[in-house]
Image (cartoon, rainbow, N blue to C red; front, side):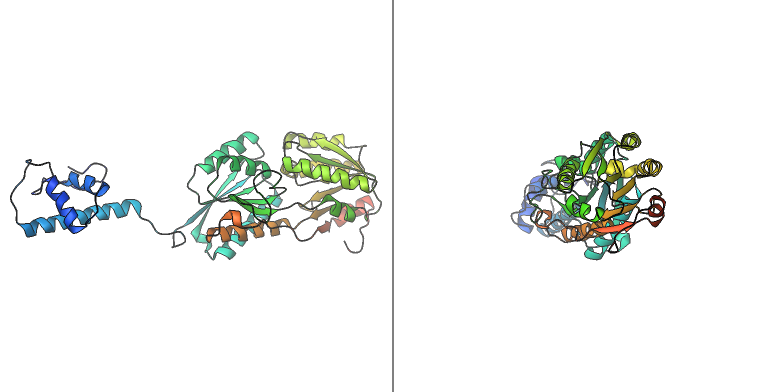
Length: 373
């Protein structure tokens, strides 16, 4: 026979429950409550199997019972403190799959291991990928919020928003997010104030256009493809239109609902735009090969904010160093792991604009870049 819920053997004892309670008071004064209630399981009630024993044996039996109880309590409630050798479990939740995201995630891992001082075998990465599906984003957000991970890294604004709505305690590290303040997940970039911090990829479109207008031949109409449900892209497109207007350039918009709409949206820009600029939209970034094929056939200049400049049909990539943003977010995650509250860790920001041309595409289109490019 065993004590319920403990697995400890129950021996019909020489000590009644009320005597054991008295012994507990003698041995560990003031320790009652749950300890006393559990102790009652070790012995039968008064007058059930009670025998006379000496005071010395009674005290030894009481000590043994208390030792068993404290041991049981320790095994149930104790554990090694964080960072004492246990494996750290971190969720990596990304909105879709593409080569750029792979580079960002690798950068995040590198930054986290460097800052935390942990070895790779001490971190368990729980990878979740929504594959561009809004339904999957919501389902995965709930899944990781309810899981036993200690921290959640998130790549893709819609995923950040879905998770931040559900999880308010676990640290959320947003990577390469556009506008966390405008999205309502941070009070400010310098002092987020909640459980969300990380890195941002926002670069003023005016800085991008200042580089692009130096490319020859110059373009007068630039198209862009984006998902209007992405709040950060709404902010970005608005800023792009303002910057373009100040430079005498017209912006032609093509909207999508998911990555499956991107090819059709790219085709809609044929004859309406001389160049195409793909912004930091995960749905469009996932379908860049389709956009590049259409642009190559239409002889359009195709520019990507991040991504792979060697993709056939892409003229150049420009924007922040995205793998670097992943590393910076990883360093921030390491600080949070070390005990700094996420609300006290500022968002990391991109330092400079990089332009990486594709010489093959440039030759096919007869395009030249400024010497500084």
